[in-house]
Image (cartoon, rainbow, N blue to C red; front, side, top):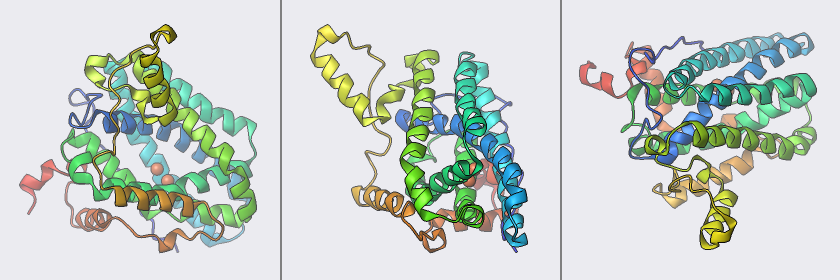
Length: 308
Ligand SMILES: [Fe+2]
Ligand SMILES: [Fe+2]
């Protein structure tokens, strides 16, 4: 029996304006998280279609139950990220075009690739989440706490549930496809696609959100772009388009923790990877305890003031 719980969550994005720069202390992280919001919508839409297609291929009832709970959690994430994205679009209408492009990238996968490929895609990408989100949640004091509490609470909820269902996609992949070799062979094209979609979102941010409000060149998270921009600035005849400053989201985090996350990403792609054995962020346990206790997790930091 699966332990996954489906939690409905709403974050009052319609109540008042949602800034693009939702954590003013870290424009690069604000922009990166906004890109994750757009990606989540397209990715989770693909997952819903994929599970529908894969369900008849799942013969083990326990795996089928896991797949059902997994897809329902992802459905809730997608709904909440849509509300976040809609709020951004209200303020920056051009972002509708960007969101459409991101969703279209995942729709193309649904139409053009096999269900085996999409199962590998989901298993590979989701396997990276626990080490990456651990780095972020372990450093919530700088990445989330100073930000808009609705946006911060959305990401914290999503990331702890990704940690909660960290094994699901791999369990489903193993039951339907069951080939580490296939998963590893597909990894380069899968991560090329992920980066392509993130880049698409960042190009849209540079295009549709004024620099005064985003305070960062959204593309600066890509090392090759950063190098190119520096070169272009040195060589004026290359006519570099200045899209703003190029800080990095995680520069202030302890190098050791960044390296642990990187090692975790690599480990997550190796054969026989078992996410059950991953080290988990302490904040995840706190979140589940508070949720059980009825704490208002949709206002993770501001509800503190009235918490018992
Ligand atoms: Fe999710
Ligand atoms: Fe997930």
